[in-house]
Image (cartoon, rainbow, N blue to C red; front, side, top):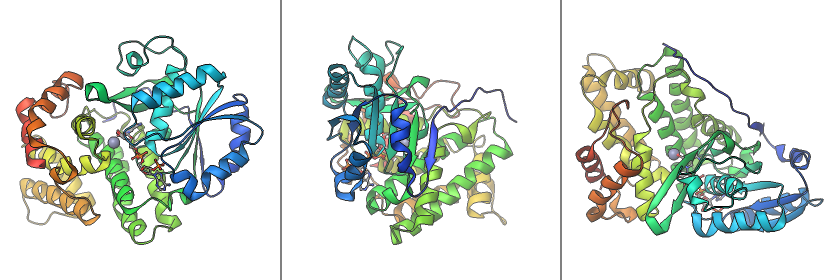
Length: 390
Ligand code: NZQ
Ligand code: ZN
């Protein structure tokens, strides 16, 4: 069944080798004063920074470098918004991974607001205006290049907020898979795990449809196949291009238009882990996934596992629904392990003594127990998932 929905993605995508040649024309539509944002230096190592500066030679460019993974409200967003106000910035160009882009989206609204920017990010105040954001995405993972969300950490209060508003869609996104050749094995694996989880968060929902299931299973199959190739041959264009395109579509809703919503509980849990321990988002998700699946498996949910098991892994034969479901959970665990993700949180620095506090934090900030969710999680369930993930 496809239920009613409203859908619009206003972001213009430029995809393929050399697509950044169109950057000056696109940027020129918005003005001459550019805030160029980037991360810790990968863009300089790969030569993309020089290329961008050359393409922007006729623009006035102010830079905000050093945006960290799990981008921080203070200093990155605060500094970026200040620069925009001081220099009369017309458009932001984000060059990097999801963290650089998310930070730039947050800057785009804070630059147009005179109060405390965190009030916008935390949803206390609705943003009325934003600067346009253009991006060159260099890591296949979050889908931020085609969605209306950003995720920002406020270390002072151990908070990591997903902030979603139509005003945050990028104006244009440039996706050249060649710029992802330099992504190391760890980030390649974690980025893929993130996108796989985006699909799974949408798959475990009711109602669902054959069409949506088909899109999502195809997305999972493509991610799982192509990540193996990219890990073996980082400069394999075919693999990198599929990873990039599937990641771009996986978080923007298009795969699950007309289906029910799960409420994205694994993301709620992972955002707390990243807020407390600054771990890599995709790794946290990969570790949580099989434990969350075990927690929600019951007679009602078994049917979704069976669809996945039969279509994605070819399980069936004389197995019962429960047996197929168990095999699906083991298969995801084994897959994440096979791409190099340690399947426990402790080695990533997570401390068991914080589990109860994190469970309270999740329920307070991003309530996973709401009754409309596909499988609501109360405090005890959150504690079981986190404890099993250690
Ligand atoms: O900082 P630099 O030097 O650029 O290095 C980065 C960083 O260390 C590196 N990297 C990026 N592109 C590279 C590269 N290294 C070599 N070659 C390249 N081409 O990779 C490291 C990780 O970068 P980051 O941007 O943090 O990774 P990702 O794209 O996975 O973004 C993760 C952030 O996005 C949020 C996560 O919570 C996390 O904060 N998310 C955003 C979403 C959204 N906006 O829709 C949805 C997601 O679920 C997620 O929550
Ligand atoms: Zn994610």
